Image 1: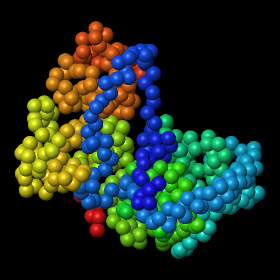
Image 2: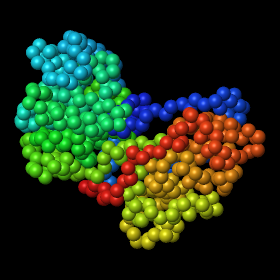
Image 3: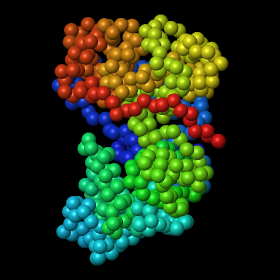
Image 4: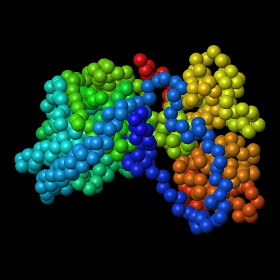
Length: 546
């Protein structure tokens, strides 16, 4: 770690998350992989990389992007302290965390003895099991204490489950947000069904009587809403249900759209704010930012960290809000944003899905792709064929990597005075050099149009960016094109696939032969799977950064 910065890194492709983390790419285990001994695979690697394609986020346009986090530690003293405490304090804290987790697991196992998941779902705990649940929560609280959260400041008046069956929590920004659960109650949570199978932690989560989401179930959303409604309207002594309404982690610069699940029951909710008033933000775990292991390390090498939980007054919905969950969600979000002193944003959890797909497909500036799409739409280019026309003659154009705004406007056939043009130019000018890459624009534009289509359709649209003809695609051009195949075809595998197609060793392949071959191979089904669940971003105005 340098003294100027704790570098950004991809949000752990080794982990999974509710926010929209990328899922690790699966190996393509095909029959053609038996040809890995080909001598051609060890030479002729791609000699050129487009820097725009490898960039994550643009610095050319100032707007609030709630999914990007940068952590800078610019003090020599702070850096030295981190390393000293890594040696002296971190091992003690790790031991404390492990012992606390084991204690919580032990209490949970005792409390769950003789119970099934169906029993936990049927009725709230009572008697000695309830007391043991409190002991489990206390042990988990000790885990956070061991990890540097010695004190949690509570503000406001917590409502009873009868006054507010649901706690709406925001902003959701960190893996430590669950400190709210262990420090108060404990309430129930909404969690993925897979969490029940996590070693140690799964038993503890089960003991909180969560509402589980079965993501593989096509009726998951409806079933989860039904369970929330049943809990909220039950006359039994159920604990409150904690819901992080944003649905994914953000950097706390704005409140993104609330998912309506917490508001379908139409019952009163209590908004709860989470704050971390510390010198360094070593907690925020967003789509584009430091990974969880780095954050854990930096958090546990501080002497202490502070967390504030603020309970706002119970929000009583009116008739219109009870009839419209989205209206209810938006109104509660406005109240919470005002209390936090931050703006609201039109971004949502679904935008993380779009960014993740763009990253996997090697689209330039995946962190900005939603804003780029909105700006292209504002220019009226999403419904035009101008990008396809430019693709068709791309290789015959000159100086396409360094277009000034006048040339850019002429190529797009857009009025130079259009403010949306200047915004788009700034988003694409990632180095702030006054020029943009036409390829970057075309990749972003075509992705915006075809992100719901299957990968083969998208790749066909890109052919002219890499080859003069779809009938004669050279090996290097083919490998470059396959970079956009969603992350499952790395350079070596793309070359193996190329040689499987070019059996006659004539030096080129056709795109049609690629389609014909891969359609018959089960391990290439990902090329023909449509992403219909990815919505098209609506044209909206980004949150004002000031």
